[in-house]
Image 1 (cartoon, rainbow, N blue to C red):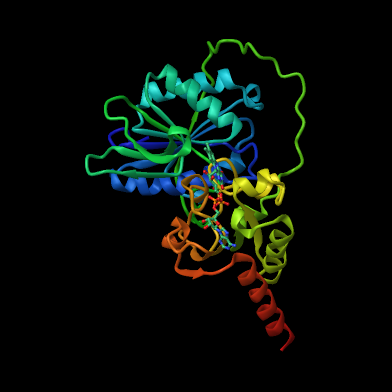
Image 2 (cartoon, helix red, strand yellow; image 1 turned 135 degrees about the horizontal axis):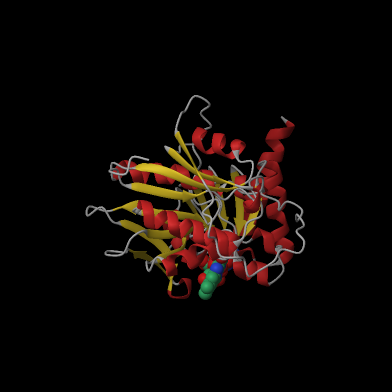
Length: 333
Ligand SMILES: Cc1cc2nc3c(=O)[nH]c(=O)nc-3n(C[C@H](O)[C@H](O)[C@H](O)COP(=O)(O)OP(=O)(O)OC[C@H]3O[C@@H](n4cnc5c(N)ncnc54)[C@H](O)[C@@H]3O)c2cc1C
């Protein structure tokens, strides 16, 4: 590894690759951060029989892949993986370490940050480098009521977790080459205090909402469960998916999996319809990728209306029904 260059590290979390591609998304943002620091992107990869993952991370933007491949690492173990990550970070002194906010990643990042005596910002919704070269970590703060920009001015590495779906992965480039460094498993690893008795794969979680190009989101302003159902018809006609705000989910107008925002899914559609939604930060934190936004709200001053490319001051359900009629007419002709 080119030690003189500043390094942005990404933890290679591949366990749920087919449900979320958070590592690829982090590599993409890591490339932008590294470019701003004239640095390089390094992916840490622990496990067994890792060639497919090495190839995948190289093709998606890694400059270096640091690999420890050993049968004893086949199963993710928090203590062992933390020990490996911390040892490597002490040796190579990366500027930044990014970890996907998966259940494993959250635990690994918190343990590692404590041992490295550094700061960690959880569930970042944005990451950038400021004029001083510091990593600005944007994350919901104070119970989610505002977005805080957090920097770690003195301690290194600067650590952050990011939820799947926050950033967009780079296209797969078969021609990319990178340096692959294979390291031995350190001989004196402390024994795991937790023993894996059994592991079972959960059925894959539906990712349709996160990946949808068109999302029709509804809020309390839809008025009732019955009216909210019209959004499903509209989404079907637009070949999109339905999202919802928290009050709507709490009222059982929509299922839990439709929740968009800080406590729910992260969406990145190209076109977003927002019906009867005020635009609370906990909801908008779940929207990335700067979609073309059409908002319908009775209140022209609602935050969602201020954010919208097209804002309609009208009854949400009436507009939804009118759009359904219009789309059906067009499909008929
Ligand atoms: C820790 C924490 C985490 C949270 N996480 C999330 C999260 O992940 N996702 C989330 O969505 N929320 C979350 N919330 C809740 C969030 O703060 C807001 O309360 C919520 O997003 C508001 O939902 P809403 O816009 O549907 O409702 P309201 O804020 O009540 O807005 C309803 C809107 O509908 C408009 N309206 C009313 N009647 C009509 C009509 N007939 N036609 C058109 N417009 C109409 C109103 O003008 C208003 O703008 C969280 C809160 C906390 C504290």
